[in-house]
Amino acid sequence: MPDDPLNELTFNDQGLIPAVVQDAESSEVLMVAWMNAESLRSTIRTGKTHFWSRSRKAFWMKGEKSGHTQEVVSISTDCDKDVLLVRVNQKGGACHTGYRSCFSWHLGDDRWIERGTRVFDPDDVYKA
Image (cartoon, rainbow, N blue to C red; front, side):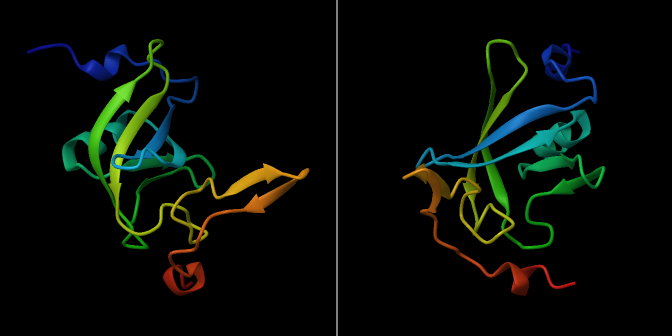
């Protein structure tokens, strides 16, 4: 059996690797999150993105609460093998604040200007 390709990746001291999530069609960067070996294996196995939440210290699948899932098209790594690029087909919004992308604010005129459009209301999606 061949070696596990995850063994070639460089995870940080907490066992995590950053994952840049990009829309496969438009190349828009949707979000950046952290993966551990378990979440990366689940992503590969299911074809849906899974991550590790540093704040909640919990494993999670993108869209498990909102229904706004990410279908994996490809997974790449950089030359140092310490960052992942995950290209996806995004269903709905990627950002928990309701935007398609977490990168919806741009610096201009010495302030952050909102350029994104909300695609869902987080109060409706994440009811307590």
